[in-house]
Length: 274
Image (cartoon, rainbow, N blue to C red; front, top):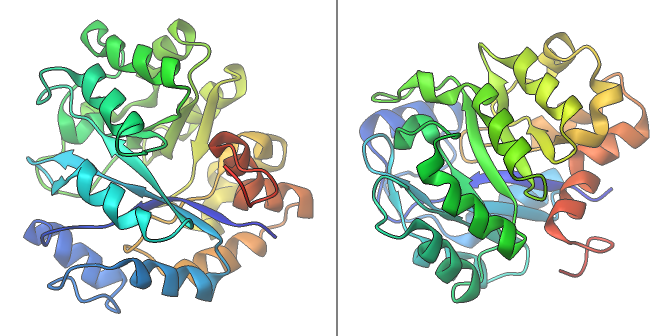
């Protein structure tokens, strides 16, 4: 079974203290005082049977810190199994669209990660639209953090997935992925958006697999629009994969969630080629 983890984090310098404390409580196997290396991810991926992992840059200095696009590009270049996604902060970049184009064409990044509640913007603000226009032109997916977060200085009001309704309507050719599927307050909104918009997907990192059926009772019918992510290193990756496999779903639905849907979005053919 092809398994793709669509949500992995790395760091150059240690994250803010509150982030490290949280991660230690979940996954103490990582030494967060030392630089993370590709072999750390690959070790956990191999243990869980994960073939590919999507790795995010992060431009959120107010909340977690900075993980530069250049670092993530270099980090992922050491193995074809790690797929770099850029981070462009519309409040910090003087030319967000140009920065994204550079990340894709020069750094080889294959998608964009945005965190509205960490970066402080509403996803449907018209000033952000040039960034979506560039992503659509480059034919790359955009994954948005949606749902609540426990970290200090997060502004939860920006995390409502309903703001993505405008984006989905205005950019019908843009692949939109909702990280955490509206975690906490907005599960119904996330499911509604995935149902009515062909270009919108739910990603389930940060959600306990054993509770997914209570959050989304129609998960079997939704399986074409659901993508697995772990939020590594804040998880036990092998346990997450095992728990997904044990859900009361058809084998086809589990295969779609764990890898097939992500492979289509990423342009993977038979799990081998981009």
